[in-house]
Length: 163
Image (cartoon, rainbow, N blue to C red; front, side):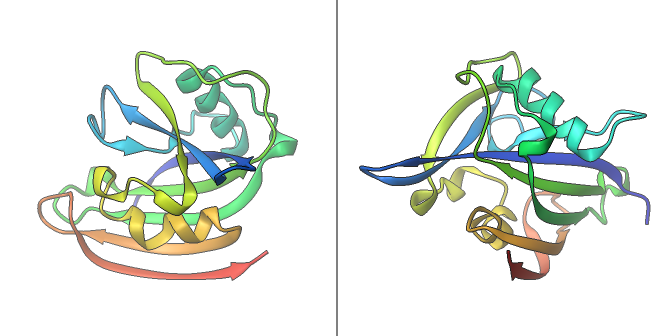
């Protein structure tokens, strides 16, 4: 199976009055338009996954994240049997350190969400299977197979380990 390499990077912060938050964004264009998504995208030729994650966070939210501040949160393989060109091998990262404040871009409207109240009903359906685990500090290894509609989950196989 051929998969396009992509990355997702989740910026995390602690709010003493309410608990930990994650930066997500409303997708304005392209794949997933109208959904709340993580910051990320395709790995360009010659880039490492970590370099791509840092570049994507800067492009999508105007925030500078350094490679040494990324933590490995695992990998999710997305399988689209009805559209095999959409298959993705996604490296997950989290970071608690960055420079700058998130700003809107042509692609994303960034927004902070409590980790305890993720907007799962506004996200891709697969997120409920692996995102809470990754945000809790685990390293996730998942394979998500989508139905013919390319939206709903046909199967979710995953494991995780605490870091």
